[in-house]
Length: 321
Ligand SMILES: [Zn+2]
Image (tube, rainbow, N blue to C red; front, top):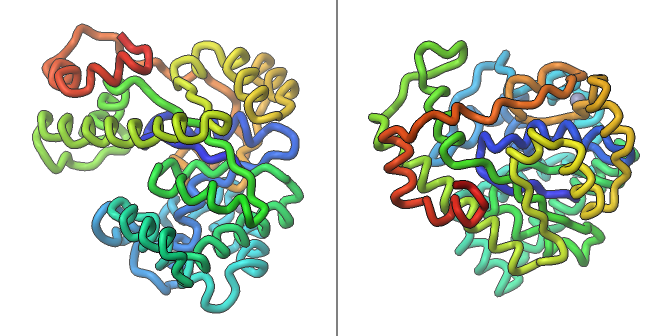
């Protein structure tokens, strides 16, 4: 299992695409959402989990589609994974326990489950391992890329070592100022896909800036706890020098990426696998590599000055000026 750590909008779709095209590897996107997506699709759950509540999702939402083009609930791979590991009540159980043990506020609950080895917690770990094995058996690939990204899910994976699931962490970090720009664009009425901003600009900067800081800080902890299992990748390096960054990833993960490199260099299509809940570009069965933009590089705005005031130290730690 390769677990991608980081914030939203850090470029994990691109990383999914590159790693998932290597032999023996399948990218599955945000695996944490799989049980919820299936339950929403069959009408068992009113919406997908958001930070505090369930967010209603229309039946035809792209969020319920697999990157192979089929709805997740009809995709042959996910149908087989569900049959092997989530039959009967296990689907509902995993969905509830994902939110109970791996939600934003869940680390104390999961920590208690771990310390006291509660039956429910052990069963949750069993289910996580069973889903991983079912994906490997169904796809015939031994390496799975899970880009759920939350660090509060990541720490459970080392506990699966006794259940025959190996894990390595790839922490994908993106310049906080470009990250905030991407959030701002999301709320920009001139953008093709936007929604109204819930708060004024400074409040968005504080909220999402704080999210950038604490998600990356927690993710960096894995580098100290598991130095042999952790690699930090900057999205900007991946975009500017994909071949060099791919080689570093290949050495760390023990993968053969020569064919992926060739495809990137020649502009040939890459495979997107069976990705659950990637971003909107996933709904194309094959994608070509196009180096993503690196941000505006504009003079510091009020927003960036505010962000630098409380997050500049972490930006510098990751090598951003
Ligand atoms: Zn599929």
